Image (tube, rainbow over all chains, first blue to last red; front, side, top):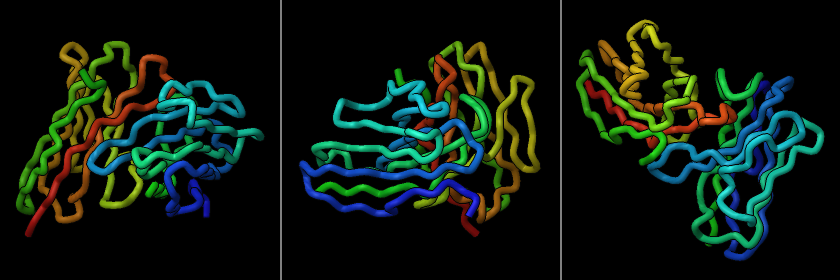
Length: 114
Length: 110
């Protein structure tokens, strides 16, 4: 399809494990965002990429979280030493340009840390 | 103070009712404002942008007051299909991201 694709759609892991979540944005969209959404909350900004570089990573909660976008398209969010509090839906979004305009979200990756 | 604050609701209204949602934001430098809609267990989708002069899209009217840092969304003639969570969204100080409110849940019943 032409939309934002995220895999896996569901991930269950044990506390302390390492997790990778993948996002494939809409073709041609240079801006890519990661958000995290917990139950009953709005999406919480994590990191923004313009091309290959992380232009704003101020939302990453701590150094266990890291994201890459090596070729300016697909991005991977990496979470080390997962904790139960990391359980949430991780949403990826892309847009044609920085900051303004419409964000197109993927369906999200639901992470459950036991 | 949170960057974007909304009354979480829920708002329970009958079909045909008019309902209004309010939102306040803390960053006076924000330049872009939006309402997004999120259906249960789905991803958020853009409902409409919000302009300083106010704007309308069918049954939906959005207004912005930059002085009081207040945004509103009015839905007229509510439909069952309007049942969803409505997210108030504002750009951050750097203009590099959109900051979402907690959302206001609307339930329209027949």
